[in-house]
Length: 447
Image 1 (spheres, helix red, strand yellow):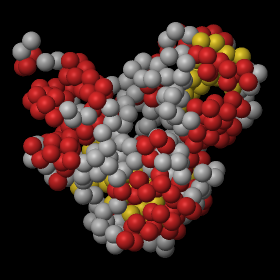
Image 2 (cartoon, one colour):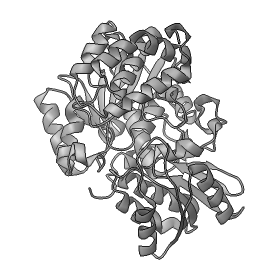
Image 3 (cartoon, one colour):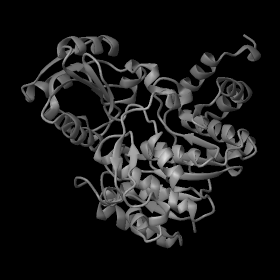
C-alpha cells in the first residue's frame, strides 16, 4: 500500500507496535527526534506535572480552568482508555486523526531505524501537534518517574509534583525517598516548583533538590492560605462547584488551583470567574465515574495500592456500607495483593477476566486471593462477558465497580463517557476554601 493511503487505524496500529521495544528511560532519543522536528517543545509555554497519583485529575482541572480563562490549551496525558487520540487534546478535543496519520507516515522510516519507543514517539507527536496548533500553554503529564521520562525536555513555567506513593517500584525504587528523587528530576534551575501533600521523607528529598537548583518551591497549602489568594479564589461564601468526587479529588483540585495562582503571578492571568467556570466544567473519565442505572456502574482507573485506598474511601463516602460486584484485573508488576486487600472491604463478589493488550494476573492467583478472604469469585473469558456476568450477579438494584487498570476499563466503558466536553454536566458538589486548605495538607495513609 502506498504511504499516502495510510489510514488512521493503520497509523495507530503502527504506534502500538512500538510497544514491543519496551520502555526506554533517557532523553537522548527524544532530544534527537524533536531536533529533526524543529524542536516543537520550545514553541509553546508549558506546565510539567509529575507524581504517583493525581496527575491526570490535576491536569484535567488545570486544562479546564485555563480554557475558561480564554487560553488555547494543549493537554498530554497517558494512558488512554478507548482511543489513542485521548492522550493529546487541543482545546479539549482529541488531536485530529489526520495529524496522527500524517506524522506516522512522514516519520515512520526514521522511527523504525532509530528504534524509538512508543512513548518517545507519542511525546514527540504531542509536542509537534501543540506547536502546529499554536497553543498558548500545554499541560504535560510525566509518563513514568520524571528524571528520565521523555517529557522531560520541556522548559516549563512551573513544575508540579502531586503525590508520592508506591508504583513502578521495579524502576523507581521501593522507598519514598528514592521515588521522590526520580519525580524531582523534572525540577529545572530557577523554575518554580509546586508540591502537593507529601510524606516527610519525600518532601525532604524534593525540597533539597529544588534548593540545589535554586528553584523556588511552594506547597499547595502555602499558596492557597496566603493572603493574596483571597482575591484570586472566589470570595468567602462563594462555593466552588466540582464534578469529581472523593477527598483525593479535593487534594487534586487544591494542587491545580495553587498552580493556577503560580501561573497568574507569571503573567498568565486567570480570574476567579474563570476558576468557577473551569472547575465546574472539568471532565475526567473513569475517576469514580458513577453511571446510574439498573444496576449502577462505577468506573475507576485506580491501578496501585494508593489508588485502591482512594476508591474505598470515596466508596464509603458515597455508598456507606453497601457492597458491590467488582470486575477486576491489573498488571502483574503492580502490588495487586495490597490492592485486592483494600478493595475486598467493599466487595461482595469478584468477577475476574483477562485484559486486552496488556499482561494480567492469572485466574488461579486471583481466585486464591478471593478464597483466602472467603469471598466468592468467578473467571470470565473477556471484559465484555465479565461485565455482563457482574450485571446479572448484582441485580438491578446493585452496584458494579470496574477497576484495576485503564486497559480493563477501556475495553468496556461506553464511548459517551470518555468524550470530554461532549459529556452531559454531572452532579456538582460544593467546595469551600477551608475544605481546599484541609485537602492541601492531607498526606493520606503512611507510605
